[in-house]
Image 1 (cartoon, rainbow, N blue to C red):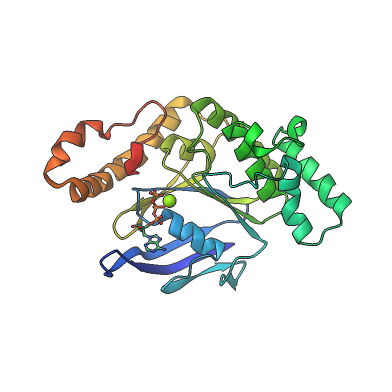
Image 2 (cartoon, rainbow, N blue to C red; image 1 turned 180 degrees about the vertical axis):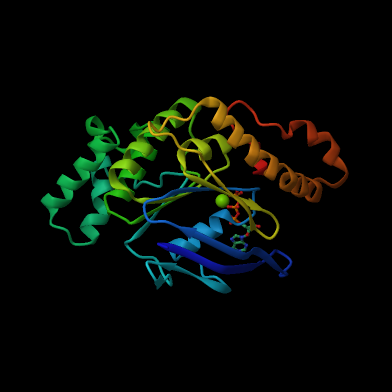
Length: 280
Ligand SMILES: Nc1ncnc2c1ncn2[C@@H]1O[C@H](COP(=O)(O)OP(=O)(O)OP(=O)(O)O)[C@@H](O)[C@H]1O
Ligand SMILES: [Mg+2]
């Protein structure tokens, strides 16, 4: 297996200096070139696991191996795309995308050519000399994806990359990401709160439970030869995931709200965009 996450455990100290277990006995395998999503209640440790794959956070127990090598620190084979694009405001789009390549001491012309190619892939050719403040949220996120991909990583780690975007922009970026994935065959590990997004994009959805975060179930997303899933299949898969999560979300709400919990149960149903609100 390409990525092996084996027996991961992680605790953090909370404000009262008590140890709280965030991840418990996490075992996940990722195939090379796969697109896997992870959904789960807020605070169940999704980002923590993603940072561990990135090498930014160390596990207390267990290990993560990529192509057989244990992850101990960040490396050029893995890049993270966050919810906020995090671009340098004083650099143009092109300069932002080139930045990492120049740090790697790539010759200027080669870096520029690569950055321009990548910006073409995310359909930003007409904006390469713009500054981040001149771009829409969706465009900024495209720059951020181009900046990540230009490094030619083996693994793209995406932590709610589209959650700050409006629905239409999100749909456009879904399409672009699918094209990029098919073209580059980069392995994608995608954290989201949006069940529909997870089902539309990925081959497998890992459903996390809380607390501590545990893998509740891994749901394969049915595929078709033309890559277009009938709505009924998408909906059925979404409902399956929702059913698993509902129990977990209730657990979180009860814990957080105590007696007020009964007022909120009516709001547990998925809204039109597939989002479950702030609790998953
Ligand atoms: N560096 C840290 N120090 C202390 N506690 C932390 C740290 N990082 C994360 N936590 C805690 O670990 C738990 C899991 O956090 P994490 O950000 O991984 O959850 P998540 O599933 O990504 O949540 P969300 O869906 O809201 O983004 C939370 O309770 C969080 O407060
Ligand atoms: Mg998170």
